[in-house]
View (cartoon, each protein chain N blue to C red):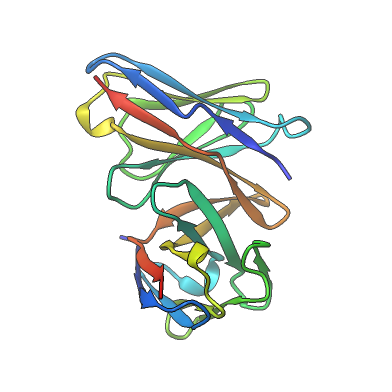
Length: 121
Length: 111
């Protein structure tokens, strides 16, 4: 079955960088767009970024624009999130999720288990 | 960009039914949404896609107890024969201009 496994989370000081990975399996990764979504402790879901299947089209939430970069390696079936200039408010569980589109209407259909990022001095 | 509004909490008794609501903002009443369930301490799980017509398509393995319906700008998730494992946060989600939008979530308590 479709599996998404995130890694790379941890504790990092404010202003430092971290790279998250999401390894995909059991589907043709290169055919799907992918998202990063985060959830701060005790809060709801917040969309972070999306990358389409060709890797060239990317969009970001205003809260991370200019600091985070989403990318993918279709040969490795892996999604990435490079997070720079981290702030305390970036502390959250980060989930990767697959996009399912029908006639141009898209939604998330599979989620990873999440990886926790804690930004603290 | 659409805004999705959900009640912060709901409760219902074991074995009963509950109907959760997600309301689309003005100008987006014809949009589809998706429902996701997040049990305590777990990742979200996709439940279904729900069209403005009321047509819904459930994800793999989602029990028949879960169904969807629509009326105007409101999108509903109905859970019948409530089980203890249905106690969870429920989020609605939609798509606009290459971004995903989430509702604030409804915390469902099974009494």
